[in-house]
Image (cartoon, rainbow, N blue to C red; front, side):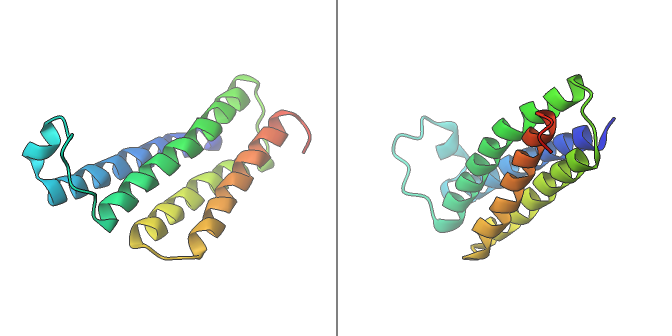
Length: 131
């Protein structure tokens, strides 16, 4: 398996971990019984629960851009040091982004997010043979 596909698999694994963190945070705030119901009358989420929800949504959005590009690269046999770097930039920045986001660290989060976006754009440009 290529490095790019490995990074994609790790990125999906990261999403799974983040979903579990989000679910656990929700259970800690609301209780399992409340979350097993229709959730119509839940109180507003506490800050950590809200951040956990946002980090899951944010990572899912990033994956919707990144995953198809990695699969296209694999099918088209596009593999280079650029695509490897792009995939590594995406995954490692997403790990750092999740940690910083969940910790509530201001200002640095958008910079880390940008690194992942640059990796995604690099993958696209490599597939299109622009770089």
